[in-house]
Length: 346
Image (cartoon, rainbow, N blue to C red; front, side, top):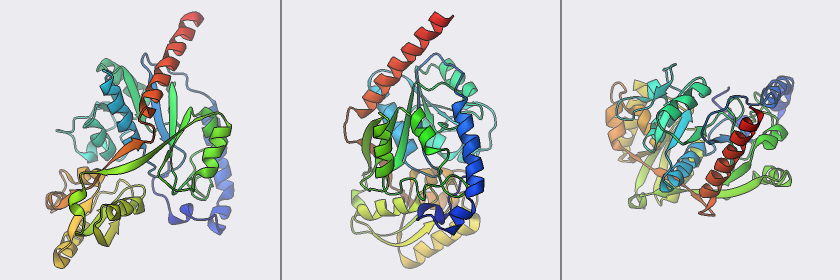
């Protein structure tokens, strides 16, 4: 899967998207066939998959965390299942945020592990079984909607309402991971994040298909002291511009930005440049939680950059506070039906 989205994916389709259309068509045929083959592997607990239509950040991780927090309030023991993208470990591993570094397990799993039991696995079925062994009674998959062979009890697709699905073309001509109709058919619900209108067409298509529609926003947490501060923001996430908008929404004066590819590990020279630039101009440094965890255990002045960079944390807030509970309830009910069918068939 392509991990870095070129800028032309997020503008109106141009000659580059159309020149790549034959390759995109082939990619879509393969992706659609893979999804239609179905998911045959069962696990004994409810499984919620949080995915998105496109390559790049749309808010999957904050969504997964919001659902996990709701589950814990209900006395459940949720477990996150991640592929561990960006990490070097290729064995099924329970993530320990006090012991592991991002280069080993990936940056997003470290954030998830702060909230609940988290396992990374290249083969998600092995990871799901590991979670069950560790006591999880609800599995929340961070991504894997288009590729995992595990049976989902509830598939929630998130979409950024400012970016939508970009130019609407499939990889590599655009950011879409699989034919849109096939993705909507296999989803149970859609979560529209933000206050834009770029996703309106997809939302209408999902609603016509009878899918539940949830709405939410990302809110900053504890960033009120940045109001009026002169800051330099740096990040390497799926949508750096989204983070830069978040910085300005805190009331900070954002004069300098540095954007890097998603999951990017800063080189020593890049760390030096950020620190020296901010020091020379007297700017306060701000970054994301995901970027901060990637600095832990780094070389050179990485520890200094981490210490000096204020993390602007965000949380998912559903318009309907009962939204996460409704998702959990639906997953539990679907898992019961799945188990009943299996007993009848067996």
